[in-house]
Length: 195
Ligand code: IMP
Ligand code: MG
Image 1 (spheres, rainbow, N blue to C red):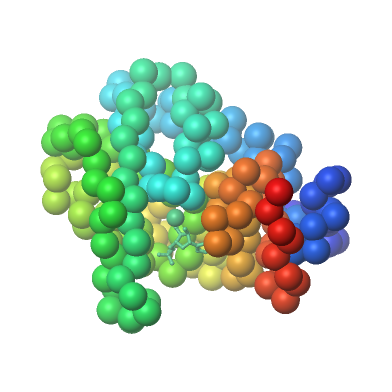
Image 2 (cartoon, rainbow, N blue to C red):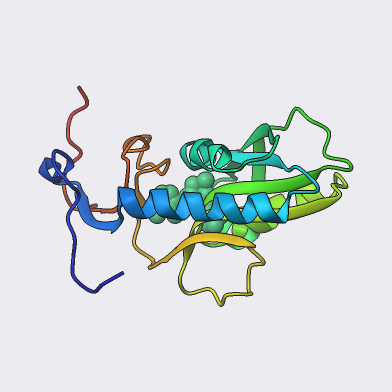
């Protein structure tokens, strides 16, 4: 991506809370198609069980799954941070657990963003304890301060800076998940009234 600042397209540019465009709709579409092709090739002999982390991953997972030309299956889980000590204590809580048994399955965990990495490290431990045949991770976004191999995320969409972003599943207080692009949130601007 260039150093030139880009704005969200109309009509979204009228919302003062939406900042610089980080990933455009065409960039998302091209990346989802590319990841789908890679996953289709890598999992040809062992169709994956896609495990989505709610809520953030649902938009990405929906598009990604349709870019995978294999008989995939789906399951979802929801996690929450435990109070304000989460970042230091590393405690993540399961709010909604999976419905399927992972034993012997080729699990592909689908995430919206790896930020601190806390959720991912918790989920990896939790899912591995259920004895899948394999476990790999696909994240739409990964913070760019991580070294490439630090996290063991096999499929990375985009590496982005530390700024808080919304859109394509990612929210700010439940808003903006349905934006068809990813952009920065201007936290200093007031939240536009809903409806
Ligand atoms: P973690 O810090 O890697 O555990 O990320 C936890 C969760 O925080 C992610 O799955 C997102 O739901 C949320 N999150 C982190 N950064 C952002 C952001 O920039 N925008 C919206 N949600 C975020
Ligand atoms: Mg999330």
